[in-house]
Image (cartoon, rainbow, N blue to C red; front, side, top):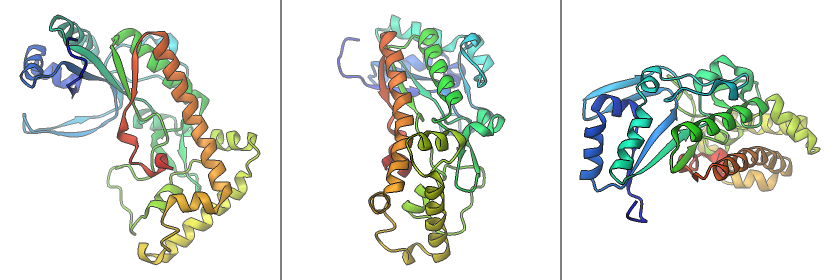
Length: 296
């Protein structure tokens, strides 16, 4: 690119297929962009499109290229077949190169309801063993393998100059499930406590670090019950509303959170090493930062 400052747009590949590459490139150039950031792996959802004045529904979480299946074990990505067969990502990369424009991709990792519903044992589980099927757990070895395989597959096939990764940490308990209803106000600390994962992998990781997981579960259960029984956010003490207070007041919670952080850090380091080995620049997408489960 001619400029060191990158100015671009985030683009869905299905929008490129619908509008056409020429129209998309014209829009980018009219907006004085020098970079296109095209998604290669995304979650399901419903999206309003103001230009076409319609909703688009993605019925599953999937990738927009044909994977190299030998890379995967138990977890295997679902493919947006029409997008992959039309080679939208490849053609968009070619158009960017011809226009002297940067070609980047953005990539969603562990936020995958399609795989979560198929493999609930690999998802985040709260203190009551409720499963958050939209959130693959980064402590699970199978999940780590899937994320690294998909990441490598993306870089080798899509070949972006830079990849922005999203959803590589623990997702929170409140994340927009269909008709998600909470019949009382949820403060920061209650949301965080209900986001803690106690799946087999998280439990085993903590126990290897000599953390008394049973004591942590009892503590979390007691704190959650106290907050729920208060039935009003205002009736919970100001200190107890803060996640930082809980981490300082209860060392067992702090150590359990550190154990979880190590799982996320392990995955991040692996992805960074893969990107470096393939000569691709890497950035973390900030969308998960506002989640209290990650701020902690």
